[in-house]
Image (tube, rainbow, N blue to C red; front, top):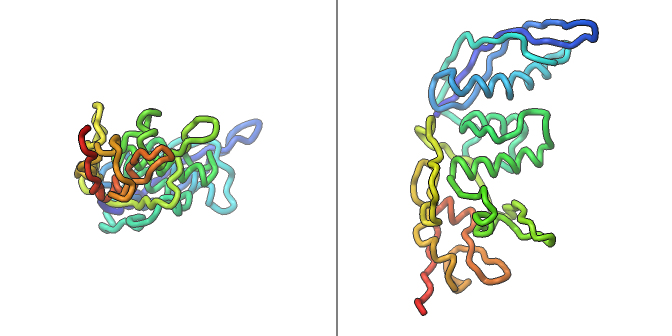
Length: 242
């Protein structure tokens, strides 16, 4: 993983009522990516970063569309990633767009389309699903996770509470696909395919709440917390067989 600088130039449009106005632009955009190439980065540059940078241009016409643009140069700057170790719930809007670019998290909303709180929540869920590979699309999956809370109307709401979700760098992530197959809970992996939930099948048993690192619901069922899934701290004894 590295920070690459993309030199981008082009022309954007402004609607003027009875016609259009065209304004040239030229930016150097620093983005986290796993390899030096245009593929993948192009969509993020066009949809996420050009609208932000054009909006921040002083004394320029408003953006209504991109008429033409091209990447003229790509340079590797360094191997750093300023977002590493940060909590997604504390990122600003631009940092969340950088996270979307790094891991190709296309579920994350585009700039200026939603509130920062919704942007952060969607970013957390997208990261957990694609990078940590936690099954959470279906209701039956969500019911097994401590960070989905049952609401008075019966629905499940995503809520990390005091659990901490930090960004980590997963080397050689580019091209990684989420496998389309059914997974058991013991298949949970830490990013980059490292297993982190040995013994997690015990969550369906009658486990003593004083053992292990699981959170529990009001029925006593032991659910894995986010920290369990990330760190592999799943030292829960299996219940005795009846």
